[in-house]
Image (cartoon, rainbow, N blue to C red; front, side, top):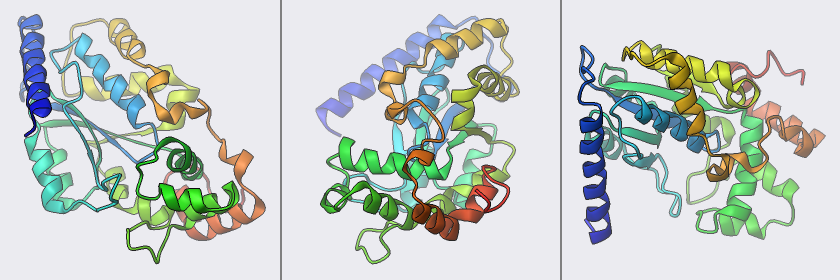
Length: 285
């Protein structure tokens, strides 16, 4: 471990102890203090959900900063992390951590997460907006991304968007089409222990979405704090300026960028995915 990592870990542990002291009079839940886990599909509001969950640190003895972030793929190399690496990360988490991950719903991971040790949330977004956001992110915002040079070499936005939809099946670095990229996450939808969140709900009806997030929390941890105070704490933790997903702060932006050809290839590749995620009832869009 580097000196910087060691120092960061020491600060984190000191802050956790301070939080426990601050809420020393608050009795632990019957099953003990859990871990708050933010699971997200990339470009779907990861930072937004992280900020919201950190708001619980104002009303309960959870950490005031993220424990760590874990991704199924390394951003700079594109290497896919193994099941063993993923389980090691999950097992490294401790009670009262708030943590975040692009976490694949492998059976072994699900069996760890869907227990009283965790309060898990899973946020995702309309895949059509995801592919648009992905193009802007890889091309303009993250020069270290493994696919940045390739996207930058393409002649226009149209060709980049096609790549984001179809993936790069012949690439040495794994990059499936948009349905293939969603596939490892879909199992989270089938477990009631995991609260699913549409990113769009946090934009279009944030109050209702935050109340659902609170309800999921309170089913595991009964708090005596007034709901209004909890809601205010979560709302106050949101900082759009620190969330890359708020590039436009809107939903349905895909309609501005999809041509008829984009619609056609997206329906071929991911029409069923839109239905599965609840964004369409069929291919008539």
